[in-house]
Amino acid sequence: MSHGLGLTALISTVITSCVGGGIFALASDLAIAASPGPALIAWGLVGFGTLMLALSLNNLVMKRPDLDGIFSYAEEGFGKYTGFISGWGYWISAWMGTVAFATVMMNAMGYFFPIFNGSNKLPSVIFASVVLWLLTLLVNHGIESAAVLNSMITICKLIPLFAFIVIAILLFKGQVFTAHFWYNVGDNLNGTGSIAAQIKRCFIIMMWVFVGIEGATMLSSRAKKKSDAGKATLIGLFCILGIYMLASLLPYGYLSRSALATIQQPAMVYIFREMVGPWGGALISLGLIISTLGSWLSWTMLPAETTRLMAQRHLLPKAFGKANKYGTATFSLVLSSVLIQFFLLSLLVTDRAYQIAYSMCTVAVTICYILVAAYQIKYSFQHLKEKGNAVQLAVGLMALTFESTAIYFSGVKYLILCSIAYIPGTILYMMARREVGDQTYLSRKEWFSMSAIMTCALLAIVFVLMGRLVI
Image (cartoon, rainbow, N blue to C red; front, side, top):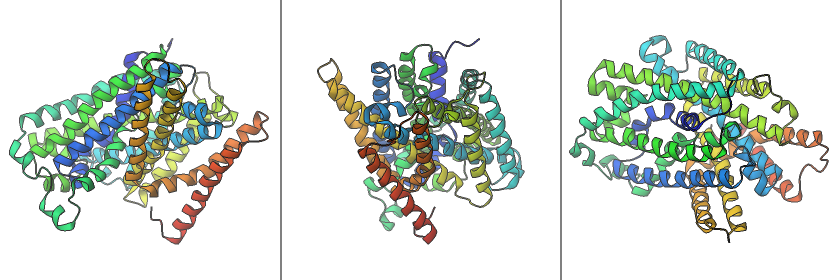
């Protein structure tokens, strides 16, 4: 019988949550956005900002072990409705992310089976739907057993990544890497070649691959030791930052930026095939399938866990928190899977499902990260006389600055679109408050927040219908 998640299982959850399909497309996505110099600077900025977030999460897990889930910090610091905003945004991001995983996995399957070439085909949607409901069934039979499976998946997915990195180091050519280190001719001609512009274009790509860094924090209530959740977040961050930088920057030393920008996706598959032959493409495709399945498993666990914890804190109706004999909130899990299924069907009518899904996912989760940083600032300021809290205050300020800048760079359009999902969410929040006899629902400040969100949501709907906001 399981007695909680250990440090290894929690680290595996962080790595598996983050290292999904995005890493296999990084080389080409970054080559489109930037030359190696600006990309290197962007990794430094995003890595530092994410470290500040991870340190904030670690501090809050240690200082407030009584709080469970990333949204609980927003609730504790700024009220129940703000906690709902954070939790609902996290839930949106978690199931939107799985849509992105499905499209990437189908591309990898197409390397072996031509029937899956192009994620918009019916066979791809059918196969992805089968995987979705099999993972739903697995998680429904116990989150902790699923997390143990994550540890095995983590090992399997890292082997092809390390093989790629080692071969890329051996074949690295310094003159290719430095040929257009800061700019290239095309950028200078079209006016997009400034270092700042290139760095800005990198942000949404890099932010996406760090989504999931809070995985251990979300499962902290199931950890053997609460402190392990914070340790797992920091260890996991340094591991994945190293992997990301090597996997995305080394290809600049093998192929030109223009070649990387136009290579078929998933880029790593075809870069490795270019390096070592067809077996290399097959190895990376297999690793991509395993990697995506692992991330999909993690992200099937997280939305159900989020809504379960929200229901326990009366931010959602009781039905969302009702657990089966395995401790899983079946209603929450099935609802998330139904919504994912709906978006999987959209693959039949759009070729931008991956970009839309990961952009919406990134913006939605960044809202939660901003609120974590804000509570880190508030808590540290309130306990400023205690040892170390002045440093923690600075960490929180840097995390807040980074996340706020990132959401601006990532696209305000997606932030406005996310507000639409808060219309049904707010109704559910009010139902939850009514269940516990809270007839006021919202304080004066919370009414202001809700009004602002609803106004954005209504404007977003109008702009979409008018064609002024293109998804």
